[in-house]
Image 1 (cartoon, rainbow, N blue to C red):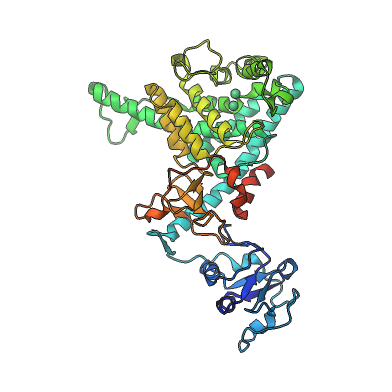
Image 2: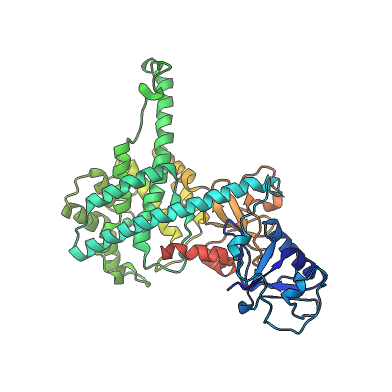
Length: 497
Ligand SMILES: [Fe+2]
Ligand SMILES: [Fe+2]
């Protein structure tokens, strides 16, 4: 409960003279970024100046949670002393009880004043970054709604299959995916903004259906655009006589225009991505979520989730769509000749449809960056690098798909944790840029107040603030304790949806 507040200018004066402040409540800015944790004792003027720069004229104090103000000798300062313009900070009996001035002011009232123009950091106007942060926040809210909707559907499909021995409402999935196709078209990989639960895996299958659908769709749209335009360029160069110049008024792609996947194809493929692992429902949870090493028989059972159990569910529901069937059956097939531990092996990689190959990459990536019963969640930046190394330069078409994968996920995927050259750790808020938020100092100790985000794409960026590609964190859980509260809570928000 916030039961008082103090002028930030007066608090700065007190701290400047050696005093201390503890708010007893987390202080966030208008973008939801934590500026000051409730338990941190502030004894640096700079911390308060940063908060003041965020537009705060007053700081709320929660005495119920040991918030308060102390002078340089450790004596508690009553708020009424501060409110007297003539009163200087002075000693008073040390006590956690304090005055109740300005009761009723809410934290919300104190936030939201952003600076016009912004502050300059590493050559970047923060005003531009603030705009992006606001967009990210708005986008996260929208993505969370869509995610919740998809999660309900995925849960229902999996529960129906389980309870009925294989039946589910395929038409309802198709209908839902119609909306999702449009959403994925305008927002690339939207669910990457919803941070992952690093400690739970019991919900993995549900989340995985949705994540593979989103990641696969982002790749599909990227691939479709870049591959289609490459083919069009080739046609225009190799067969110029076949490309008649379109009249000014006509749509550009009236003639000679090639599009790899049409709208209906994309709809079918998205449904397939969503349903790719339905066969796993038929595997007992004791095997699916077994922590120890699988026996040969258990491993064989898991392999069958695609080409045997998944296919059986498709048949049971009389789904004649070959795209969905191919994805369910072949999403663990080899992507290049000689790839090991792939199944089934009844088709050579050259005959596996491209959209199935996209599903496989999305599947591997999501499995790597998720917490599972047998492993921790992998840092997304490492997952992208590993996948790229494994599948690069195998064949031309796979290279196109891989390119679409890396472009849509980003070299620095949202949610990754990286080192900066100066030794700070930073959280990737957005892969575009990328935009990162440092959360430790140079020695790895968590910052007590939030720092400004940095745009790593800024060409004028200080060398020390660039990403250090020679240091990496394998699993985000390793540094979870060092994540500030506002990033920790973000990590678990998905689980509450
Ligand atoms: Fe699978
Ligand atoms: Fe999967």
